Image 1 (spheres, rainbow, N blue to C red):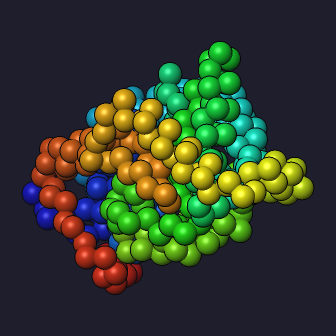
Image 2: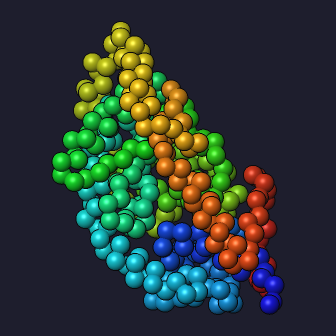
Image 3: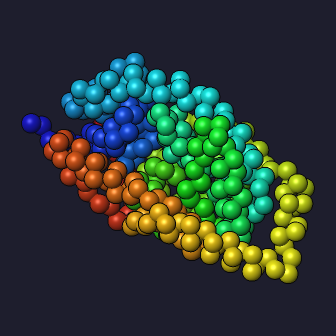
Length: 308
């Protein structure tokens, strides 16, 4: 068997990761999520040479998995009404007290919502008011449950904690796929704080995801009015009370290696999704006779020569 060059290997890694989610990729998406620098033409050339990759209807996938093209197109069509609702709900969340940014995350951000999946959001809040903001967001989510809409605010960080501490492929992909709904100025600061992503996905830019929205800023006058009674003498006490009471409820659900609860972070990943994704990814690489090569953070990626 002819040894794979760096580009072909990176292409197979990219396809294998998306294969976890039954999500074949367009050529622009393959290029965006490559682990090494390349042009779009180089990526296309590499795909034509990668024997373990295949294509259909403009989508690329691991050989033998062409059924995922049908799954992606079906899920994309089914995601349209949920996406529209998610945008509306995200704008409502963005107008709530102390919320400074709302981003859509998870499968719906790439129009790959499976049946029964949640609508996932990331919120950025004012420092020192994360748990009050979460109380409003959780209450809103419960109000939507009777309508069959499952809103999951599974990650909140304050403006003091924009740098994400875990620098791995899972985090990089999730951040790149997120769609900002409100708070574009804070979103840009989030991008600036997480330039480490370029060391893992050097062709990606946080602000160039496939789905783009006209970001709506919350009605500041209404938000300030809602925040006014919560900024009084007892506001710090109320924040501590909100944190304590919510952590008491959260504790009933147990914990995992991927949960994190502080004054600046509320990460409610009870299902260890990162660990699951890594294990399945590694298994797929093993089946392709590849081994995942960990990269040092900040290591400069080698640009592919035109001769590749």
